[in-house]
Amino acid sequence: MGDKEDEVDGDMISIFHRVDSDQVIYDNKTIKVKMIGKYVMGDLLGEGSYGKVKEMLDSETLCRRAVKIFKKKKLQRIPNGEVNVDREIRLLKMLQHKNIIGLVDVFVNDEKQKMYLIMEYCVGGLQDMLDSTPLRRFPLWQAHGYFLQLLDGLEYLHSQGIIHKDIKPGNLLLTLDGTLKISDFGVAESLDMFQPYDTITTSQGSPVFQAPEIANGLPEISGYKIQSHHRSLSVRRRHRVQTVRKHRQLCTGHARLATTVPDTVRSAGGNARQGDTGSTEFGAN
Image 1 (cartoon, one colour):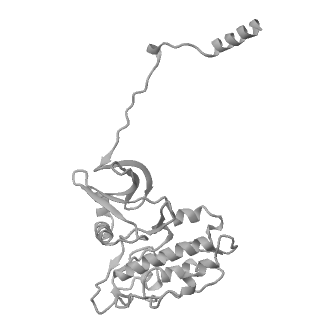
Image 2 (cartoon, helix red, strand yellow; image 1 turned 90 degrees about the vertical axis):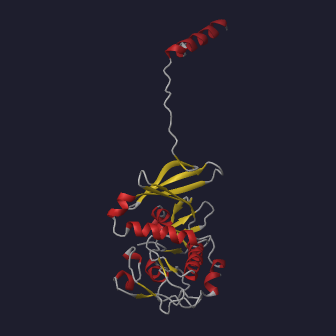
Image 3 (cartoon, rainbow, N blue to C red; image 1 turned 30 degrees about the vertical axis):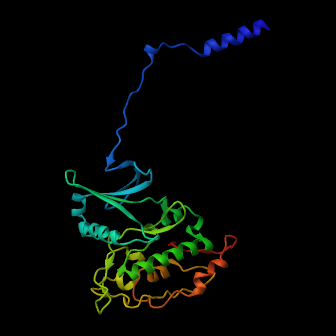
């Protein structure tokens, strides 16, 4: 018995070797924490033509945020770049709705010629979700939920005289609890609530998702009657929810939004449960 214990001890000695502390090499590399105001800069979340989006942490409340970082020199090289960013800031400051992305704070660093837009944090977007699903489609019950939230957000925008003009899966974000947020108001247009006409004069946005009259670049496009708060979406309740081609027309907030959403559409969730086998082409090409 003693011999076996000696053998075990011998094996342990051959595996583990004592090293004096003065022979250990320590890596004392310090990590620099970048702060923007009270916010701690985090990892990169995404990057677009206008700038980068990074994760942030509010050092006081410990709430996660997202920051859109713009370089003024880069914006100056983009047609209407500075104008679009200024418009987005102005509109987001006046908008407050559960389905509209919230603007928390704005910082401008004149020395570095950078602008920081602190936004609500979202875990992802519909485009990324669609790209990761089989056949790039959502189940009917799931698409129905997103669609109703989109309607609520658009109805609020229209009540404020604002046309987004770039509704697409890439601009529809989701929070951790599944709340849909309409984002990216760079090409949105605010109409005068008291003007007699309801026309828009620019056609910026993503042509593939735009209504034909907007994508064609007409100098003036009839919008919707601001005086009428109620507008409609001619939505047919089929086994499949509207395809993207239908969405291009009904989500842009233009000419054909003139009556209210039928109650049968809003209550369709009662028949569109997770057990349904139907699917939707929401966002599919």
